Image (tube, rainbow, N blue to C red):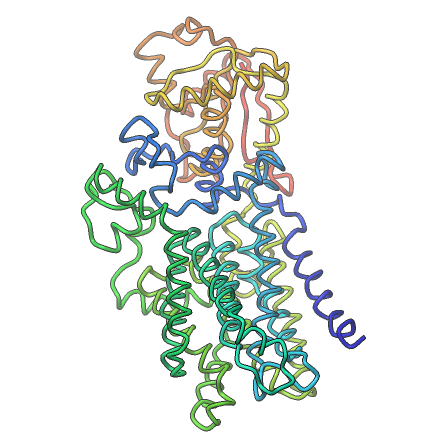
Length: 585
């Protein structure tokens, strides 16, 4: 009965977290780096249409077996999971984001479990045999509504997965340390301690670490956190357990190691992340996608504070600063046994903060601090008796909830940035690309390409042919169509909506500038001579373009079509604002 009563609050918290993570999950345009991951996950293909950062299969114009082991800029696990989601839910925004939302919901549960194990002022189990619910529930509540935690769960970025697997590893690590029997009646830990089942716990730590490493390399921060804690607590007897965990993690990570060895043998350097970290020369990769913005150590140190506020909220950032100051003061005067949660969290957060300085305080990287913030707040709320402070905390929670919903659920967010919503909201701004995607789905439903345009890569052509064959088997009718797009539209949106259809479905796609250049060089009848009978031209309005004013080829093509009497079709974004124009001729 007691267990049922204590289960009710966490169920309510998880329901709230689920609503915040799954409600209108398919809102928000695909204009962030999630396009890079989703495009490649559809076919587990390391290819980006980026001439200044060609992938190994582009350099080789082939897909040798070792290139399936990883990707040139990230480990493979997230691509595999997202690819499986696409197969279940289809190539849509639910398929793109649902696995990340599930990971975000799981992270709330894990923060609850870790919070219970960090219960202050007492052993990890109280006299009833139940862990401290108050700390766990408080931490889970913060994690459920915290702006970066909600935002990262609703977008297809690696950070949601890496947070989840890191939390599994942290929980398993604390569980592995809680092995010694406390008294003769502690039958469970007596069994674990003397039967060898403790090694199973350390094995779970290793598996979780390995999966985190296979998601994103930033998860390597777990190693110094765990090693540092064992050293600080003088738990030398547990070094063997950690060594086992690291060995298992390395075994799981071995595909990436093999990939990098083969890549080094082929081009003389490791993948994008390791080569940058080691200072290797990468003549093939002129664009390192954000690495040029990292800056010097001093510049990173100056930016980390403002970026942290941007990645959270003014309320959460202020609460975090107060909690850190309180923990540091508490460490100076509290007994060692009572300050254990503070010491563990200060160690972990210090190493995580240092990792941000190493990789650069990019906004999306800083959201991975969310669980540590939630745990620290949970520890302190667990210490405070219910009263005025808790009432004030409820008010702050309501403010944070509104801020979080405005950032992640409303599109577009209302009010002033940094006061009413986080700049994170700009990564899902409704420019109208989702409406373009819906238009293309309707227009291309039940048809397949009758004509294809060969690319320079044989494996891309093969994928297109396979896609056409699948459509033919479903009864799709042939359509000789060429899709032309405005050069100034978002590269990421075009990668998802257009180039995905080129690679995996075989549709001919071309930028307006290339279209006009081809006509000028080969004649006005060139495309019709290739068998193309219908054309779609997608043009953007000024406020949707990457730079004011459409390039000359786009304006010229639109003017020619207007002069011929072609009637355009307007695509409006949320709120009815015209953002795109589609010409069919």
